[in-house]
Amino acid sequence: MIKYQITEQVPAQITLHLVPLLESENAITWNQFQLSSAVFSGKKHQWHWVETTEAIYLFFGLGQATDYQSIKTAFRTLSHQLKKSVTQQQIALHWPNQLSVDSVEAAWNGFILGTYELGLFKKEPAISPLLQLENPVVIIAPEQALKAIEIAEKLAFSQLETLRLVDAPAHQITPEYLAEWAKKLEEMPHVTTTVFDERECEQLGLHAFLAVGKGSVRKPRFITVSYEPPSYDQHIGMVGKGVTFDTGGLNIKTSGMHFMKSDMAGAAAVLGAIQVAAKMGVSKRITAVVPACENAIGPGAYYPGDVIDSYAGYRIEITDTDAEGRLILADALAYIIKNHQPDCVIDLATLTGSCVGTFGYECAGMFGSDDQWMQRIKEQADFIGERVWPMPLWDAYQSHIESDIADVKNYSGKPVAGAISAAKFLAFFTSKHPHWVHLDIAGVAFGDDAFGQSKHATAYGVHLLLKIIENTDIQKLNT
Image (cartoon, rainbow, N blue to C red):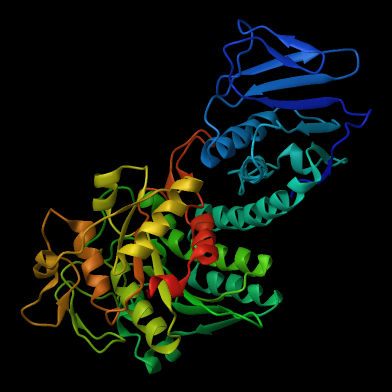
């Protein structure tokens, strides 16, 4: 992480001053500098360098928007671009007085995330120079900003871990690797991790989960991470889809398989969220379940047309082996609801291309049994910029998952309402839980942006889940 210190006084030895400024139609005055609007107006991503005999000043524009996501992106862009020219400078980051404490959190979180490098597997792995500075970055801000900066750092740590998990290749991030990663969370207070291997899953009756992994030489792991502080009054359950690579099975994918290492982004987000929540010592009990497996082709692979058992006791007709995520989530949801009985439960999954077709890469599709809770989640999502949008689960869609030969089928076979029918399938296994939400994050967990030349992870969901954990009030939801 970036070393830093916070002070209200500017040390004399600073050699590089980073000065964020809001957009203005008039000339900007900052300390002894007069900046003509013709040269620098503070527009978004606008930079202006000034060199004096004592130091270098970089003025960078924030634009007019002061929302969380805009500030975060501006500062992430700053550190991402700045690392190309930073040497062993004494850096000061000045904070504009007109911005809120929430903006301080957003800015420092973005600044840290900008140090992330995709070149993790090169002969000489890239490391941001900002992480190698001998002297700490001096943040010029009021002392009351310290708490926001500490929160931003803890959040960024887990987001960076999530980015690495999703961006790493599938031969490294196997189900067993995810299980070992989750076991290390036990180093934090009040955290315990339980991992079931293939034999134990069979004994428990996690048959839908096991069916998906039968074609792979990399054996599945069913992971449960529990955070139980000494005092709490609410229990939140989280489930993350952990398909570490998805070929589609015998209904093999015909394109885009290169990026199917990202099909465990829901699992990574859930693990990252419980990690940061434990680090922050939130006063709520959290249980996270990650069904981790590969959907591969091999001698034991499950077939289209199979009828498989499930943890809930229902039998499932397999109409498409590439609709595998909902199968492992079905067992995971049934398991967490029966055995851990959370007050609320939310699942995240890169589940359907249909959701991408509906929303593109702007937001997740949100489904659930509790409109009030979904509205509050949407408010939190809008605030931090990890957007969601509610979708229907009307009874009219029930026919999409009805089977003639089993209790339910895993895919409708129809070219319409794919995200909705997938969510209807999940709802079938929730025992009509009154506070269940499903987020289809297929379009937002992995994609293109200015921070890499190819598609890569976004860490979507880590911050949103933290906000949900912090702000969910089960007493209000029950009224």
